[in-house]
Amino acid sequence: MAAKPTIKSAGRKTGRAEEAVLRKKKSINELVASIEATQQSTSEPRPFLATLRNWLLDESGYDEENWPKLKRALRRERKRVGAEDLFHG
Image (cartoon, rainbow, N blue to C red; front, side, top):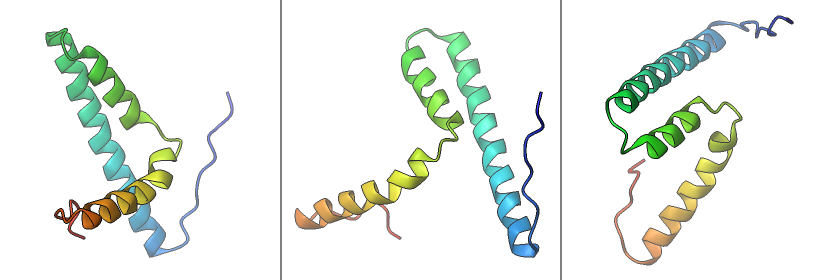
């Protein structure tokens, strides 16, 4: 089994960014564990929870790439129809 490549820290800023990524992954893992516990206790929301779990574990970068585009489109359309901004920032 090949070892995973590591990203070397290029200073304090990179260290903070890596810490933020680790906190996010920990949070996602806790949420996934909660989803799995919920799935064991009920059968109704299984398809939704499975989809949510898979989405949270996805590391392809698709959501990070496309979310800003979707957010801009939502803001543009809400502004066009006179609706309140959903994101406030």
